[in-house]
Length: 96
Image 1: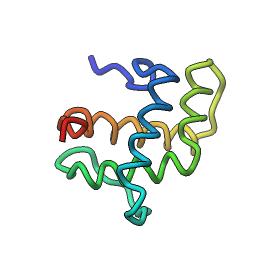
Image 2: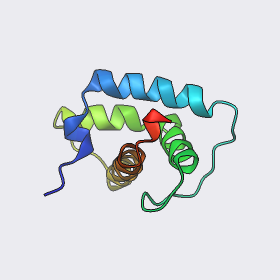
Image 3: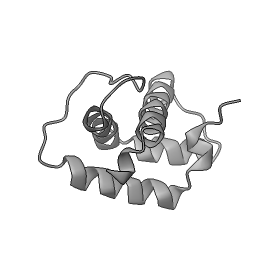
């Protein structure tokens, strides 16, 4: 059974990860397309997460963790972020 990353990652961890990702991808332009977690490069996964962070996904994750209802669009963005994060962590990109 695959657990949702949003349940496993604390709010503090999200803030730290957001800061790390912002620093890593600050010099590269953010794309608008979804980077599929399967087979994507670490760079493309970082870009996708940075785009979603800039759109406020961290606050949406916090709201979801607090039990608040999200719109369908917000739920989709949280799911995209979780998929990118799972790919990023699964490829051990944080160790590169």
